Length: 196
Image (cartoon, rainbow, N blue to C red; front, side, top):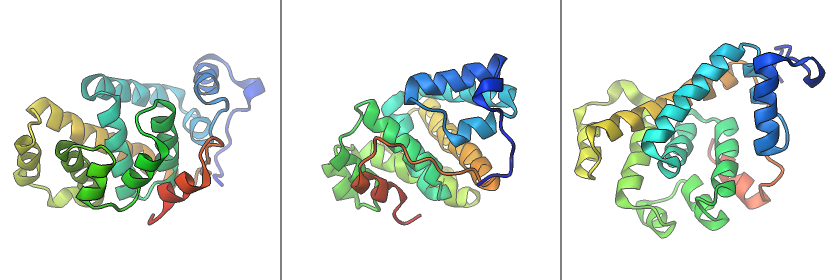
């Protein structure tokens, strides 16, 4: 549990109150990560703006796949649980496909989960950004280009993975409590944290 003192609901005003209310509307509660990051509400709002700009370009499905892959690379339970739950709530995947996507699955298993070869390559790129970005070369970007991604999409994939690294690592560094969304079934919860 983080030692950071957060603002109680009853004392939240201005931007902090807006951030809390946004999560209450979307999730039904205010997660620990929102409470801790709202200690600097302007930075939290700027980060959310960056995410919105990336999602607007990539689309929700691609963004969530990249997020799940990047969170695997950073070993972020926070992000995998939150975004696995989000992907289910948005109807991007059903539970069976999400379990396949979240597990260390082969390309064939990911194909069975409805992912295209391009999406599988995109996820591999995102995970590598999160585990060993310093070793990446033009060959990694060319692999995405070979799957039909434009230069803008390649940049957006890198940005989506990097923004997940930023947020996930900040939560880990601050020892923020991992919230387990109450709507996730036990098999999905296990799949989202397995191997991390």
